[in-house]
Amino acid sequence: ITILGIESSCDDTSAAVIRGRTLLSNVIASQDVHRKYGGVIPELASRAHQQNIIPVVDTAIREAGIELKDLDGIAFTRGPGLLGSLMVGVSFAKGLSLSLDIPMMDVNHLQGHISSHFIDLPDRQLAHPRFPFLCLLVSGGHSQIVLVKDYGEMEIVGTTIDDAAGEAFDKCAKVMGLPYPGGPVIDKLAKEGNPKRFKFAKPSVDGFNYSFSGLKTSFLYFLRDEMRENPNFIGENKADLCASLQSTIIEILLNKLVRAARHYDIRDIAIAGGVSANSGLRRAIVEEGVRRGWNTFLPEFKFTTDNAAMIAVTGYFKYQRGEFAPMDVVPVARISRM
Ligand code: ATP
Ligand code: FE
Image 1 (cartoon, rainbow, N blue to C red):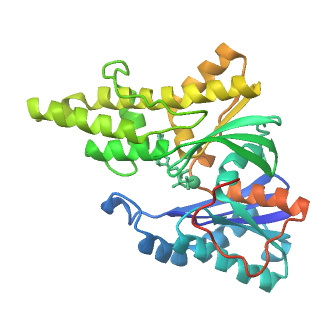
Image 2: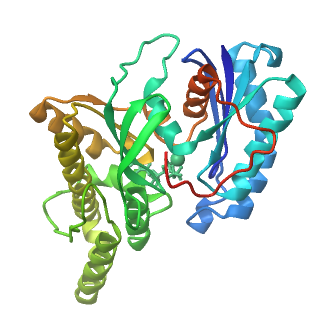
Image 3: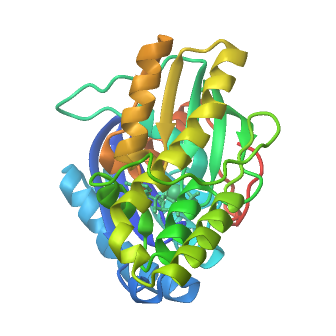
C-alpha cells in the first residue's frame, strides 16, 4: 500500500510518500516570509502553500521513485490549524483523489505528531512504543498527555488550560528580543547557561493538566524589574536566562508526565511535537526514564516539527481500517478530542 501524505496546517508545506509504514520521501518547504513579522501571518501562509504545494508533491513523488498511478490513497491534515492553510491541502487532496480515483483519509494533525513514532526508515528500523503508551505531545499550539491505546485510538488525559509549551518558549524569546521561532534559539543559548541561576513561577493545576501563561508573566515581570536596575540585564545574562527558563518548562512538563505514568501504570513513554526537538527535554526524559524504568521513545529530529511523513503513516493505518473521508469533507481549525 502506497500513500501520499499532505501537511499544510501552519507555515510548512509538506508532502511525503510511505509504502506500508516505510517512508520513501518527505519533502518540506518552510516559509521564511513570517520571520520578519515575528510570527505566522495566516494570509501569507495560505498564499505560500498555494505556490508550494504542486512542486512539493512533485518532488515527493519523484524522490520516492514512484509515479502518481502507484498511489493507493491520499492522506491530508484536516485540522487543527489555520483554516486558510488547511484549505489548500484539503482542496489539493480532493482534486488528486478525484483524478486518480483513489480514496482519501483525513488526519488529525495531533494524532499525526504522535504517529511519527510508527514510521520506519528504508535503511533503519526504528524502535516503536508498545500499546498502551503515554505520549507527551508538546508543540506550538498544544501541550497534552495522550494515552495511546492503538494506532487510531488515542485519549487526551491532560492538556494545557492556557498557553502551549512551544508558545511559552516563543513568547519568552520574543521578550528577550530573540528571533522567531524562539524555541530552537533558547535551546541553543541554554547550552551555555546555568539552569539554576534564576527561579520562575511554577503553576499548580489540577489533574494531568498544564498551564504556561503564569510562567510567561513571571518571566516578563522579572525582566522588567531587573532592566530597571540594569538596562543591559538581558544581554549580560542571556544564556542563564535561557537555561533557567528551559529547565523550568521541562520541570513542569515532566512533573505531570511522571504522575500520569504512575497513575496509568505505564512504562512506555514517548514525546512528540516541535518542542520534543528540545535537547534539554530529550535529555531530561531519558534520565527520568532510567530512574523509573521507562522505555523512552524520542522521535527522529526531522519528525518533531510539522512534516507530511507523520500524516502519511497515520493515513496508512486509516486506509487499513477502511476509514475514508467523504468528498465534502471540510477543514477544521480546532479539534477538542483525538
Ligand atoms: P500544533 O502542532 O500544536 O498545531 P505547530 O504545528 O505550529 O503547532 P510544531 O511545528 O509541532 O507546532 O512545533 C513548533 C514549536 O516547536 C514552536 O513553538 C517552536 O519554538 C518549538 N520548537 C522547535 N524546536 C524547538 C527546540 N529545540 N526547543 C524548544 N522548542 C522548540
Ligand atoms: Fe504541529
